[in-house]
Structures are given as C-alpha cells and as structure tokens.
Amino acid sequence: MRTKVMLLAVGLGIGGTETHVLELASGIDRSKFDVTVCSLKSGGCLVEELRRRGIRVVCLNGAGKGDPRVLFRLWKLMQEERPDVIQSFLFWANLAARLLGRLSNAVRVVCSYHDEIVSEGWLVRMIDRFTFQWSHAVVCCSEAVRRSVSNCLGAPAPRQTIIPFGVDAGQFAVGDAASRTELRLRDGGPIIGTVCRLAEPKKGLHVLLRAMATLNRGGNDPRCQLLIVGEGPAREPLEALSCQLGLSDCTVFAGARRDIPRILPLLDLFVLPSLYEGFGIAILEAMAAGKPVVATAVGGIPEFVVPGETGLLVEAGNPAALADAIGSLLRDPERAKQMGIRGRARVLAAFQMSTVVRRHEQVYEACVGHA
Image (cartoon, rainbow, N blue to C red; front, side, top):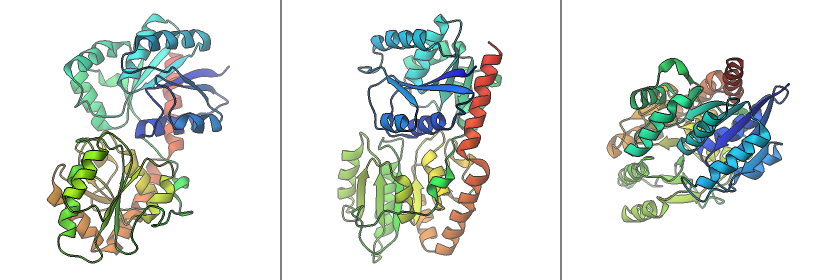
C-alpha cells in the first residue's frame, strides 16, 4: 500500500521554494508514494506545470495571510485524502500543518525551513517557537538554517535533518540558448546575470547595481551589461536606482522567466549578492550550467560554493568588494571557465535532485514507521 504524502506550499508562483516543491513532487517514487500538492493560495504559474507532470494539485484559494477559511478547507481536504504525511514549506504552511496535525492522530507533520530566521517579527517567532513541538520531523536546507532554527526557536537538534536543495543537472546541459536580441541585450561586452525574487534588502540587488556603476566607471568599451531575471516588489525602486546610477542603458530587467536553462548560457558570470540566504538554489542552477559564481559569504552559500575553486565569496553589503571580485574574473576568462567546469562537477557529485528526493522519501518512511 502506497504512503500518501501531501506537499503543502503557501503558493505556487516562481521562487526557489516553489521550484523545489515542483521538482520534489515530480521525482518521488510513485510506486511507493501517492503525492498531492496543496497550495494555501490560488493559482500560480507552477500549477499547470505540476498537472502536466501528472501530479494532483489542490488550491485552497486563501485571501491572504491568516485567512481562517483556509484552515477549514485544508481540514476538509485532509479528511477526504487521509494523508499519512504532510510536508509543509514556509511559515504559514508550517503553522497550518501543525495546527491541523495536532487535531489528527493519523497524519505526521514534516516542517521545512529554507531560510535563516532573521526577518520575522516577534509575534511570528513566538508562534513558530510555541508550535514547533507539534512537528514530527524538521527538514532544513543547510547547516546555517539548522543553526538558526535551533538558536531562535530552541529546537532540539536531533529532530532536524539537513537536506540541501538539488537540481536536475541534465536540464542545464548546453542546448537551445536564448539570444541577446530576445533579452534586449546589446551585442558585445560581458554579461553579468542574476536570477532571484526582487525582494530588498534581502537579495542585495542595490549593492549589485552600485558595484556595476563602479565597474563601468572606468570607461571600458564595451561596458558590462547586467541581466536581472525575476519579479517582485522591489522592481520599481531598483529600476529607479539603475537610472540614478546611469546604468539604464546597460541593465535589463527581464521579469519572471521559466526558461532559466536557456538564459544561463548567455552569462559570463553569475552573481547573487544576498544579505542573508538560507541556501541560494539559483547559484546551484548556475553552477549546473557551468557558470562561475560570485556570491556573498552568508547563510548556506559557503556550504556549496568553494572559494577560489567554483567561484568567489565576498562580504555582504560591500559594493567595492563585489566589483573587485566580478572584475577579477572578467579579466581572467580562463580562470572563470575552470571555475564553471569545477562548479558543474560539484553539482553532479553532490547536489543531484534524485539524491535529494531519495532523502526526503527516507524522512517520510521514518515518520510513518514511528507513527
């Protein structure tokens, strides 16, 4: 008899966690597990993609954070589906799973943490801390996140399992690449790129823009171009800062895209200047595409980016250090190329999605076995 697993997400738009849910649901062994993906919100661009892959999706159409009707809808769904395990992702989904799991003697709750606990208000943290005990297992995406959860929530380490993100490296093999024209990029000159949700100050994109201004101040011809892929609440302020710094002619805001494997081949260098980051799945994708990486030494990033081998790590919030690191690799393309080769080899050796899926399956089996 197959184990019934429900993956509970806040939403199914574009993002690192949402992409992780997509790939996890797609990879789980269907001969052993019956998988349903449930979203507290309505719709999202990944809903149809999940369904095309043969995965059942249920959207609870929540009106916003803390919509009490979502709890009733989720409880009704749980009574109909009778899942053996619910794995939840991010705070609101974790809270809903814990509350309803507390009312049910049958379901086992696996809560997931994908970021360091640094931005939540005191009330959210208090609720998280109080309800944490109702989790049967906890999955953290990095050792940095595990430490943060332990320190901020007083969580016992033995209940936590570290399972890093993974990627299907085969998707990032060189194939059909986007053109510069398609992405409104000029011919000539190096292209620096990043892929992330435009959420400031977390992602540090204001730091990247200031670093770009420093790089292009020397009158290099042709100037470096910056490609920012993603959408989010900070887009307008970032576009305004780009204009203010005189970068509007060499910065492209490409919006949200689902064809990242086509875009990465265009880049000479991938940059993620986050001020804090639980893992940084976009970096892993860039490494899988054979791209050298410049990132900040925060959170879980140093756990998989090896400085001097697969990329360079700099101090967060320091535009000058970021510009120096980017410039050093642009001036030494052979060194950058070798970093990209070693980065892809590291992904193939340690961060394949198939391994990540198998480790999640082991967590589900352990939960059911201890029920």
